[in-house]
Length: 219
Image 1 (cartoon, rainbow, N blue to C red):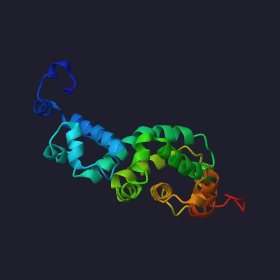
Image 2 (image 1 turned 90 degrees about the horizontal axis):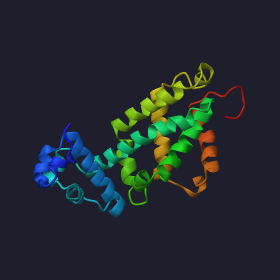
Image 3 (image 1 turned 135 degrees about the horizontal axis):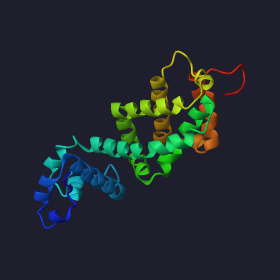
């Protein structure tokens, strides 16, 4: 693979470097530029022209890789989600009960996004509504959620898996949990500001729709 950073590429004009770049290299350069602009100016104030200029390419070249700013927001989000998925699975695999996996999966996912510098920009006050709308309508995000759900719930033993309502598929559970996480990120409310309150909300309103009670004990 030819790298745009190789020594023999130095001294070339931007146009020549762009011609040498593979589609994957060009895509990464654009995403890096988008991340930088989002961090510097915010999502809503970053334009396609700004991002193209930061990437050292023309607007037309950018549009050959991405349809517009919304697609860039989604691509930046997906790239970072892919980076943290392994960490989330490792942190959640120690839980044995289905209700604990679901509850802590939501809590840890929300916390991870808020603690992640890149993701916190996408879900910051000026961008949360835009990012939430884009993410909520993304087939790619939900496909990753399905994969994540299968891996995570696959770590449960057979007894714990049987606590998941039989009429629900793993993909349906994953879809629902993504929407819950997005709602926590996009619509934060004072009464759910602490993780204690979030756990209470999840156990009261989310778990009963997914997990079968084990004979009357609290979920």
